[in-house]
Image (cartoon, rainbow, N blue to C red; front, top):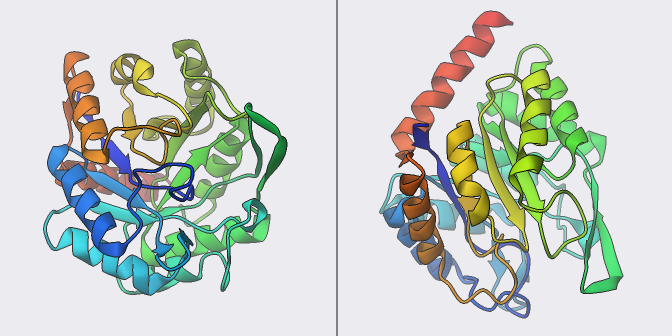
Amino acid sequence: MGQVWIEAALNGPWTRQKQKGIPIAVEDIVADGIAAAEAGAAIVHAHAYDVTTGRQKDDWEIYARIIEGIRAKVDVIVYPTIPSPGLGQEQDTNRFGHTLELAKRGLIEWAVIDPGSVHITRFDDLAHGGVYMNPHEDIMEGMRIARAYNVHPSYAVYEPGFTRLGAALAKIAPPSPTPIYRFMFSDEFAWGFPPRDKYLDIHLDLLAETAPGAPWMIAGLGVDITPLISHTVARGGHVRVGLEDARWGCSDTNAALVKDAVARVRKAGGEPATTAEVRAVLRAMDVERRASS
């Protein structure tokens, strides 16, 4: 037990039709990000939106306004998502175009690079669904950007194969900056594991074989992740909460979800890490990875 990283996922791709409380406008996303950081989050994840359509829009200039707006008030890691056309999201350019532009400008420290594809459908709407597609060329482009601009891959691990591929790609010489393995649990969606201690242990057994000592956190979609926090703290992991991940119809704010996570982490014997502490751990891991390669 020790320092626990807390990440706040502010909105996701859901639109307000599915998650009414999410921030959409830049100023609202900035305000939520600042509030989440002040509540104890060291990391903030956000999706940019077109306020005229209410849909996700992955424009680097919108993300730059969000990142700069949040970091003008709080020192926190802020990173964007990537589009998912297979789930009906618009894609103006290549999927990592905005990631590259933000990385070139030194605005991001982490990037979503998900090493695999997964079928997405909800148990309450099995007649509909789609594929969250991450073609190999897209994954390799994300890893190229990570290496070129010293950006940490943030892997969403929907299924165990994501861990195996992510670990293998990160080891290709020269090694990438240290990836963060984010184990995705779900109740409302028909993929992965529900949030139970025994299933987290399965993820951790595989991670120990493929990427021993790698930083990891619990997260999910359509799920209450809090039952896993105590076991996560005991196993040395980190926690993501927020309206992107919460069950649809959640009435809490992002700040309230972070405050609750902070209280649960402390009750379990951990202490929320500062952003400076997160960066320091990752720098030390990067040095070790380079030395051992």
